[in-house]
Length: 335
Image 1 (tube, rainbow, N blue to C red):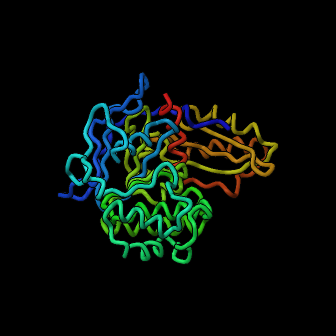
Image 2: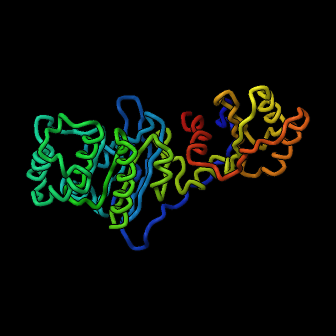
Image 3: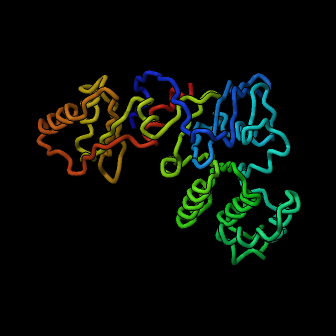
């Protein structure tokens, strides 16, 4: 597949974080830098999460997402910068306001789900009366007395989420929360995250599933080379990537040369990619921000007409998805 990564983009200033006027951010990282030996992982990172909103954090593996989360939780000390929870400098007491599920479920496998939560109640000073309602909330009400070590991956994820919610935190950090969940579990997770945000929780999550981030996040931040590259809505990310619109279609295998011809004719206006799909070619045209899709599609019709082919019935032009926008940024982020 020809990638949209070669698209030429013009950098624009980061939009200001969207938040509710007068509210302090639940979490703020200001000018945070971190190195491991000679490897710089974070450089002057600024990241805020305000109450009542869901924030998605995207980046390639090694971009610094996990390091940023570990610093936010006090698990790592930054070389420079400041961490604030609920408007106050981070300290040990800050952890009472933050719930997290990162680096996979951390459970006592020999203990039941209920006893796992009981251990955390004692460590955090939380009333054990919260356990049963919480097990029900994450879909584990019927298995609270079963050993956590016997749980499926999805059930362990649910228990880890219950632990993160045990103290009713104002800030919730979730790293790949949908991993191991079945489709029903993913739907329930979406509902839970939306409910928490509606109740005033600041939710910050990462995921390799772009549709999940697109579905859940109010504000999306893209991290690359240890900095926030861009942030905003899906439309903002796509505009920064320079591909606000895409056209998708399929072509018969015998017309494999059409993509190359179209790319040459649309040079400077679009990037054209194709991949095999069930004996046909699935084609995606990534339109540059200042291009005219109508004029470009007229070129496509002309190329097909010259070959005696009709316009594909499945051709659709629509706003670029988060995944498409992110792919267009990937090479530049990696550099």
